[in-house]
Length: 276
Image (cartoon, rainbow, N blue to C red; front, side, top):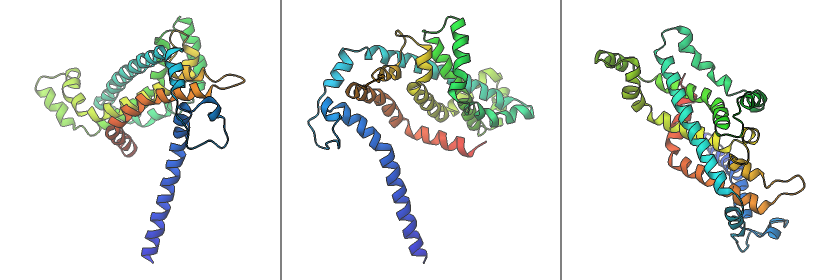
């Protein structure tokens, strides 16, 4: 009886895993395959599994459109968001670590409430504020908006990691003449490398793929990749070839970074889920 239950359990887990893989990989396959199909072949139903690939869509995107400018804008916005969010979130978590009040020690448990706020609810007030400060159309507006989306989560994640840092290390540093501020880069930051790495990929993924703020807070000079891809979707038609080619080029950097940082990403998510 126990053998049968174990067999059914393995079969059910295999079926769930297969469904999850199909659900995840099929859309990616469709986008990538459409990027190398001819325009007429994209519209064929059912689509052909065997076809002659073409790179014409990639050539048009890279030569005729401003893909290079969109790419550089996304890099500037994402890197700036990562630096500001990680720095502010880590310092805030360190402040919670050394805070002696009961409220300060428990406040990290409610930080995720900020992550639960829908983006569209803060879009209008942020747009009004940035517009009055003449920041719309610059890199500053989307960077600050993206920071507002990720700062709560990064602070919560760092605070959970810092709970594992023994207070004795900070006390020993104090005895050796290090102030609280000086102990931060010398003692705390080296111990937070896995947390910083996982937070970096999570913030980059959020900023790189964000569209709503990018549409409202940027202009033609500061459009990121997400706006560049959305440009191929018209009111009456969609240029599926160019859209798929641009989307394929867009996901390559985040996939590469995610692949090399995977172990830190998994450890960061696991730590944030079981600690606190």
